[in-house]
Image (cartoon, rainbow, N blue to C red):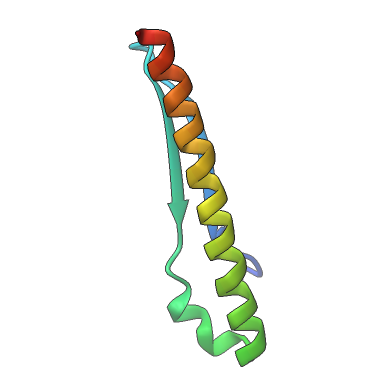
Length: 72
């Protein structure tokens, strides 16, 4: 059975047993999905993913800055 959905973007906050806090952003290369969308749908998807990546990177940077401030 073919899947009807795909995870295109993810953001995790991971706490390791060593006491390390890590953020991780994963993104899927959607170029191979282009054939499944109209041109408009594909362009909207690209725009949404680009915007979401930018916002998630801001969150990552904020968390990193907060953690670094606590170390000082």
